[in-house]
Image 1: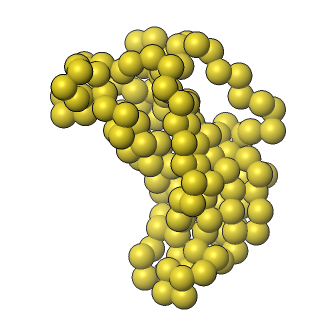
Image 2: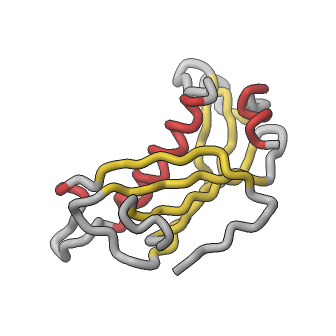
Length: 139
């Protein structure tokens, strides 16, 4: 299946991750919960790459909603090719979207997901304005 990413979504990051033997379940394919881990890894690596790493004693992202649609089973061995898109920036929130393919089959989307992310002040437990570095990436 080929997923069309609407123009209002901006591609911001791409990376590959190995499919680990332990990612599979008894059915011989990657367990559905692991896909959410792949989505988490690409979001965090993107944030690190732009200098917006979460700081548990300061500020960082909180996922308030997440989803994943499964189109084709991922299986070991191989590498996941993850591509991250962002949209709808607000004062403290934005949407992220991700496609997951195999590096040896980059034109086939195996899964696609996303999340609503809110930037928060962890000690105060409330939303905070996003850092300028992140806001610049979202526009």
